[in-house]
Image 1 (tube, rainbow, N blue to C red):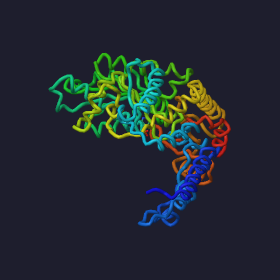
Image 2 (tube, rainbow, N blue to C red):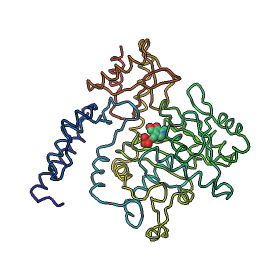
Image 3 (cartoon, rainbow, N blue to C red):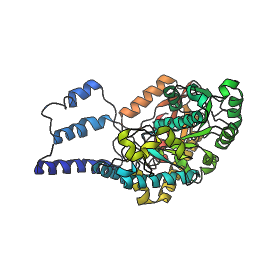
Image 4 (cartoon, protein in one colour):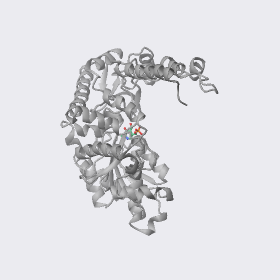
Amino acid sequence: VHLHDAEAAVLTDAIFRYALDRVRLDPAPLDHPRTEAELQALAGGSIRPDGVGGLEALRRFAEVLAPACISTDHPRFLAFVPAAPTESAILFDLVVGASCIYAGSWLEGSGAVFAENEALAWLAALAGLPASSGGVFVSGGTAGNLAGLVAARHRWRSADAARARTRGLLVAGAAAHSSIAQAARVMDCDVVTAVGDHRNRTSGESLQAAVDGLAPDDRDRLFAVVVTAGATNTGVVDDLAGAADVAGAARTWLHVDGAYGGAALAAPSARPLFAGVERADSLVVDPHKWLFAPFDCAAILYRDPAAARAAHTQHAEYLDVLTERPEWNPSEYAFHLSRRARGLPLWFSLAAHGTAAYEEAVETTLAVAAAGADLIRAAEHVELVLEPGLSVLVFRRLGWGPTHYAQWSDRELRAGRSFVVPTSWRGETVLRVCIVNPRTSVDDLRTILDSLQ
Ligand SMILES: Cc1ncc(COP(=O)(O)O)c(C=O)c1O
């Protein structure tokens, strides 16, 4: 359907103005969810034979649907893992959308693939992976973890034909993200979880004990050791060097899940925590979490891309023209074929601002988190539940139980003040904030702590 020229001009103008205004809101309103019945009454019935027209559809979005979505980039959105895309990354996302690029193959998208690979190479270099490593941007950490583990199992199976029907097994650190268990379910393999310490950090010794504790038959089924570089609930980074020793001794694959925390590789102050990451066989880092890219953008990197390629390449008559070429085809490094060039907004923003700006921005968030921890230590009504990891603070409001936390959290969101939700630690309901937005200030944290009084 081509719009008539005049109509197209008006609609184009309206869409660009909306997008620009939204990008420039500082901050955007926090907003809050609405019920399905409310949304139905206010904006339902948009899909019908004659359409409602572009301007009316945009109005429904701007006035009803968008305000029913919490702004993940609000500086006091501190629940889960927030987002803080740069203005240039967001604007370039519009360019990516307009460019109709198929970024699954070099033949069709070489320019985009080249640029995405530059961004991936920056991440690989931060981790100290060899220049020959490579990977692809997938939709999220969940997809990245599954892609990495599928490659790990494929290498294990390929080494011995007798393993073709053997169920695989992975040993995971205590704080492994739920997506590791989900990947194991999808892959129909087993997970043995190592024991964590008082912060739920998993050491090499603990991983070794888990491997040593496997029955001989199970030992043969081991295809990966999985550790977390920045646990979602606590920010704690596992003992990566110890994990690399264990994986090396067991001649198995080391997968490091840095979906949230891997961004801190860019911060010199945090880099020592990641010692050993350079020995990973696969590494996940999500730029849509803490590297200022818009959703969705997660990097899966492989030390030996050929191993991943062997696991993931789809073969079909009509695809031979792509897969038989020597160039880099992103579709061959995860379980997907068609893909948007979702790494380009990151590439553009990195190119525009320089990597030093990224280093500074990640350091800023770490410093604000550290200052927030000091505020908690100094206050009488709250206390840290454990020593903070990276930019996550877990703390309790003295005297409160689950209902108090839930009511406070709802009230703050409804009032548009903050979005902080409870989590649990060793069975106790507590509060957790995750700081990835350089616009989140120490004052924001002070305001939230004061509201708990
Ligand atoms: C450590 C870790 N791994 C994996 C994931 C899953 O990432 P995604 O939500 O992008 O699928 C998360 C999400 O917070 C995470 O923190």
